[in-house]
Length: 130
Image (tube, rainbow, N blue to C red; front, side):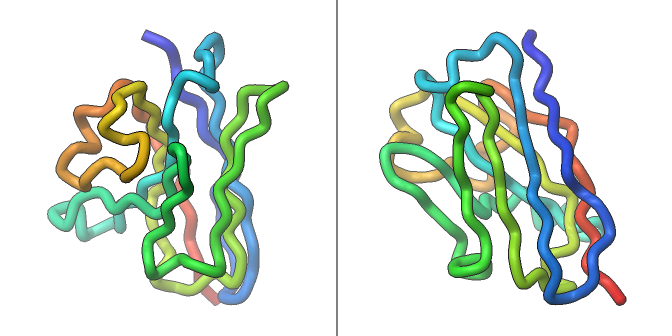
């Protein structure tokens, strides 16, 4: 099982920015649909929310549109999530995920499907606070 490595989380003030990174060594990125999920500490029962997904098209949750941007760097096989104008409600553990299924080519996986995705990371914590 390949290891999913996320980084870039931390503490930031409201209005600030962070960039998350995700690599899966040895994974042919071009063959996979990939994205970012988040889950709020203390609200685990609410499950995982897909905030950005890179398939044939790009998906963003309404709550992050215009503020977050997902991108891939092919030479380094790295997935990024640029997060700008961060708000306290963006505080969460952020997880990288990847899957080859054609079901996710045009639409992101459902929240309940997160744990069934082919690859899932351990998460990186983003805290937005004064």
